[in-house]
Length: 80
Image 1 (cartoon, rainbow, N blue to C red):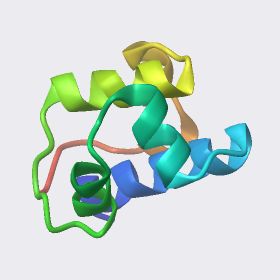
Image 2: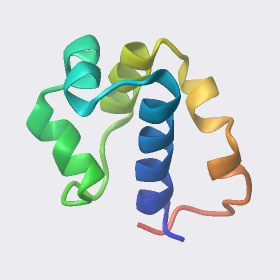
Image 3: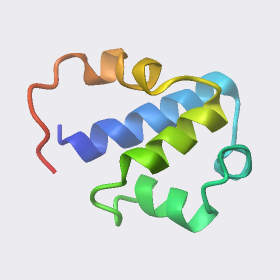
């Protein structure tokens, strides 16, 4: 699985866990809806760390909590 797929899986899992829609995440994180959709549909290949940080704010978690998860556990390198 590529890093991009893992990133999308993590966002989707957090949305389910927090019972948030993409719209709610976009609103709470101040990340434009189009940016979020481009991340999850993988048309944005490499979202910046600041954008991921804003999404984390919207989820109410830290960047460490975002990346310290089972989805990223077995990832050895980033193959975008």
